[in-house]
Amino acid sequence: MFERMPERVNPFRLADAGRRLQGRVALSRLKRLAPALLSDEGEVAVRLEFGRNTQGLAMIRGRVEAVLELGCQRCMQAMRHVVDEEFTVAVVETDAEAEMVQEQYDPLLVEDEALMLIDLIEDELLLVMPLAPMHPEQQDCVGRDLREFDPESVGEPVEEKDNPFAVLKTLKPN
Image (cartoon, rainbow, N blue to C red; front, side, top):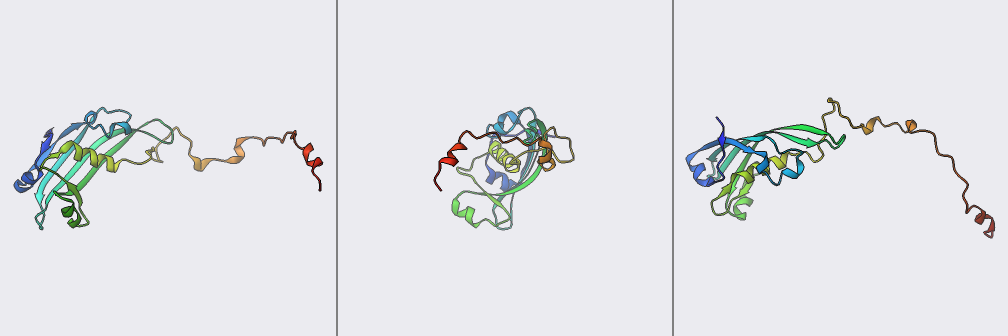
């Protein structure tokens, strides 16, 4: 059952306790994501598992699921972008700890033992956003595909008009 996500958590305590959180966050609360969306209606379903790895690092394994309404850059019409993404981050308190994190984990710097969950969720959504959203090729898109562009179909070539300065060529000494 999904519930409302807490605003702020101590990820180190949750990792020690091996806790799991799941809930929903309204898209309208994600202010950094809002400029990329055509509509902020809807929610993000979130599942987070806190724990420690074999080296003792606090870890968060999560999943975000949402349907985002984006503008297709080909036809400029609305399109649905389905997000179903899993992620794993290592929670660290200092830059030095972040440098020691293994390559398979992204470090998440948490100061004062407080993590704003909405920021983590929004970061993960921003990371999976397409740079130039477009309808999938198999779907009808109102926009014209440039690969189908035929320069021959543009029309008749424009006739060259008389250049009023052509007479100056005759005045130029050889």
